[in-house]
Amino acid sequence: MIFDRSCVEIDIAALKNNISEIRRVTSKNADIMAVVKADAYGHGAYEVAKTLLDNGASGLCIATIDEAIHLRQSGITARLLILGGTDSARYADAIRYNVDLAVYDYESAKSLSDEAVRLGGKCNIHVKLDTGMGRIGFFADGSSTDEIEQICKLPGLVPYGIFSHFAVADTDDDEYTKLQFDRFMSQIEELKKKGITFEKRHICNSAGIMRFPEMHLDMVRAGIILYGLMPPGCPKPSCDINLVPVMSWYAKVIHVKEIPEGTSVSYGRHFVAKRATKVITVSVGYADGLSRRFSNGFELLVNGQRLPIIGNVCMDMCMLDATDLKGDVRKGDIVEIFGKERSADELAEYLGTINYEITCDVGKRVQRIFVD
Image 1: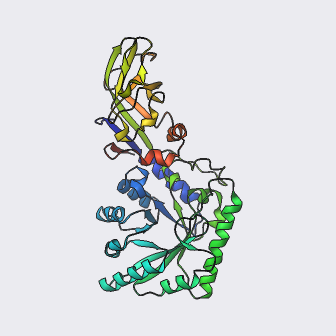
Image 2: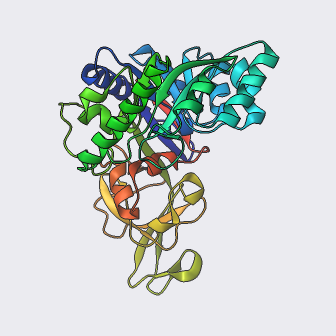
């Protein structure tokens, strides 16, 4: 593997396996929208998107109009849906690039309608319902039925989808998830009485796909499981699904030296050697996404052995104690942050966060290498 200072290896075969497995356990009547926002959770949006679309995904979910434009300009023609808010200043871009937008208030919908009419175009919309997430969306209690009806009749808008998002599908609070689903379906039924229907109803996220097959409806949104990682703390799926982690993160040994007892290492002198110590310097730091909270204790893998970080993680480098390393270590040796030997989940647990954050935080300057 040839790389400069740090790289993530993206296993395309694993990605193909994961989308195939998701397709296998998803209702045959439900499309799969692959969530590739945040540069495909740090994996590389275009390459991941192309692979997923070629292997079972029907469309893609993103977070911003610029993410959508990047995919369009890279040649992606599939359906794109922005899951969150879009500023009215970017409505023209959404219409020109044929991007579906989430709608959750009349004022924004009217502005979008006006822009579509001005441009002589149309915009597919997905009405967002708040069934218990408390983030964005119309309350799914019937109080917004008339407002949603007005939106769906605005010129230039095509009411293609209606959706919501589970808050605790990845926990054992199944009653709340069922409550959210019931609210969702009830609001859809209220709109149907008004003659308002949608081609795609979607509420299932990764955990919902695996745990609640009866809620797949017309479309599901696969996120973290695409990348071979489970939602943290998620109870056992109701189906057997074989997921393979897609990302591995590596750096290199760039210097090896011996320091005497009493010598300090890194900023702040938070590590002082209590013995003669072999120190190796590694070409990865917090600007690459290796959090400074890993300082003084977290272990990286060198030649299959775990070595602790000593001193503070620097912007571009960190140092390891290799005194007890069995065998030799040389400049150019590979250092694994996570990958084949351990999952990103271990880093997440150490920091008290979730695996999503670990992969998303891998910096843009870290080279992406795609292997199949």
